[in-house]
Amino acid sequence: MTELTISPEESTPAESKSNILNDVLQRPFIASLHLDWEKAIYLLFIIIAILSRFWGLGDRVMSHDESLHTQFSYQYYDGQGYNHTPLMHGPFLFHITSLSYWLFGASDFSARLPIAIFGIILILIPYFLRSWIGRIGALFASFFFLISPYVTYYSRYIRHDVYVIMWALIIFIAIWYYFRERKDKYLYWFGAGLALMFATKEVAFIYVAIFGSYLIIRLLVKLWHAPWFRNNLVQIRTPMLVVLAGLIIVGIGLAGQRAATKAPETAETTATTEGFAADPNAEPTDTAETENQGNLETIMRWSQIIGIGVLGLGLFLTIRAMRPELDEYPEFDLIILFTTLILPMVSPLLTTIAGWNPRDYNLNQCILDGQETMSSLSILFARMGNATCWESYFQSGIVRSGFFLMIALIISILLGLWWNRRRWLIIAVIFYAFFTLLYTSMFTNMGGFTSGIIGSLGYWLEQQAVQRGSQPIFYYLIVVPFYEFLPLIFSILAVRLWTQKKNTNEVLGYWVILLLLMFLLFSFANWVYINTIGDPNS
Image 1 (cartoon, one colour):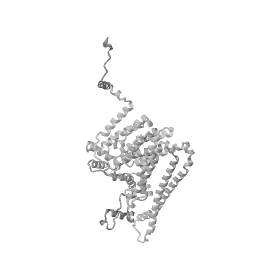
Image 2: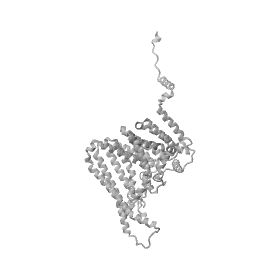
Image 3: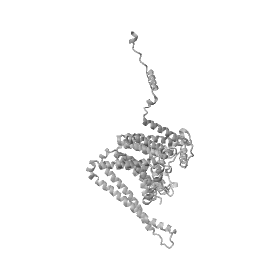
């Protein structure tokens, strides 16, 4: 009787943990994974991706581009340092490849290992877009990434393409999550993705144009349907007149510059087509007329810059007149971030418009008579009081580029602080932390910051006149249907469905169509560059 009434002894903590482990081990493996069909398909995609990305990864001989990328990555890994040059695009590839060398040793396989890993991760990215494109749509997007000839090939090839696609998708996802929840953490992801995208490849400027233009159009549509906006159009009448004035000044500057350069170019072309270097019977050229044409061209160039400034001022006054109502729109936050973070990197465009070379990093030196016998302090004061030294200094290429860079930086900082001091400072720190660490090669090449923020766009502006590759304007009309016919077919069907039922996701349609147009018209930029901005070296 007493044995029945005795309570059992309580189990010790060690016994409790042992019982829990036993229960876990006794559960069916598949049941513990909670593996539904969706996750099973993603798991199958991962297995196929691992096989297709890693099989024989180190067997193929390095191509020309790969040989350059591996050479500079190996030098960085070997302690010889890495100096950024826009010719090789951004520094991210070289850092992650040298890290792979350090972890796994230098080999063809370890050189291609990071890009293969990113190629596998890329397949899973559409999973985070299920709320907008649906579970089936996300699976199809992942499937297209899996079988895409371009993505598969460049997931086994040391280039920047897969990396920059990854960062662009992170930015895209961060934008849409911010639309839905408006949490600061998505802006932090946005800033990190933007920095890494610009630290990877200059095609980031095209992605920014696509994303930014969509945000602007989306915001304008929302504003037009907002009652408060239509009731307060009078408040933005004056700022919009300033915007119009800026556009007119820019247009006059462009037309005047082309008119100023047209006559000398026509004369030179006529002489060369007739086969003569010069007409021996012609009257001497009037140098005063040539100087006047040069002065007129300079005035027209600076008119464009002034017009851009007036345009920017008008846009700011317009935005200020609509606050605080604009703060209710997430598109406004993202447009401000795009503008403030990218504006300093667009400053080389102003340098080029002014007729200067944004990739001229030289700093002119002023040599004084008898400075060999002078002390350093005496030389400093003598140069400060010498007008010729000041003129030489301000004609230095790095000073000219730095002038526009400093203006862009100041405007970016002031605009960001005006928008939201705390949030902008955090996002700017995230952006410039990634940007500075990579472009300076972990602070071992401080000049890399200048070559990254100025030289990247400056170099590729010059390449518009070179036409590297010499692809015709219809190049992508041939390549895309040949290699990526499935996404093209479904994109055309989606556009047709949207025109019929108006229920297809407009975002993806806008992105696909504008991306194709961007690349189709990329060769046309050469004509625009030569005929409007001109060659800064000429």
